[in-house]
Length: 464
Image (cartoon, rainbow, N blue to C red):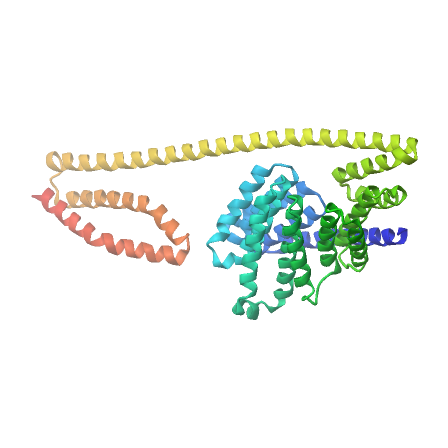
């Protein structure tokens, strides 16, 4: 077992090194990349890498850069990815309402866009993940089932299979993962029959996939083993967990190898405690604790330490006291961290609220300035027209001067109309030069007859 753990941790640290190398390579590529859409997707990839290293502040930093750059270029896929990164960040910061806000905003963008079908399917998984962060497994099941349904439709689409043959294996594994997750959610809701049903369905589908990592099967077997344990079928459960450990050893994905092994060791320790095999329970609990400490999973660490304290309370009183004190210290540390995160969440929400207030004030101020400008232009036009009428009757007797003033007045009127219509044209054409040019010609053709008609009328009247 020591040899197994040393292999696991060696792979884990090799994985960390390779991730750091990938991050540096991405940063170098971003520096020289000229295409903004490609750069936005690189920012998202960088955010994902930092998130996997649990550096969530940097993950959010690059998710924000992806979001800002994508909004500037109206790049829908990049906007979705940036929103997804922000949602994940707020899950980690234990702020589910804000996490849901971002992820549902992304979901709305992908809903009616056929070009973002794959992103829409991916977002369903994230929504489910957010709901599990505050133990809302019923809603988590709803969105996971939607994911399964949409992914099955995609995989049954002959055109998609023909054009995306390289993705079929990956999509099939994603389908099995979602079915396994639904089994897990039913387990959390103590709906053991449904959990076993989905778990067995996942194993059946996984056995039909040739290219798969052993950890996929090991994970779903852990779920079935936990159900058997909850039902009191300890012998069946132990056999399943042992088989899961064997499979996890074959895994080529370091992170999966660690997490699945940990889960099996931990569940075996619990069962051994229940059947009063305390020495074995201590042995497996310490193996699980060793992994848990390296992964810095404090919540799980408390449970393992408490189990060790319970086991030692019968065997070794001094060891029991040590683990009871350790459990107390970790619990206090978690409470302090929760308070700090709560304060951070409040301050972050207040900061965002203030930013929204300032943004609203800025918009109102800009709107007011625009209205004042339009009012000023309108006033100038009215004054010019009035002056023209007054001067043309009492002062000006020259026909050429009257004609010139008429032309100036008409130009002011039509330029004012052009000023009002320009923002609308820009919005319709999305500032594409060719379309803007064509729109200007069409507008000129529409206004030209009115210009000539009004000009002739005014000249005739004034000269008369």
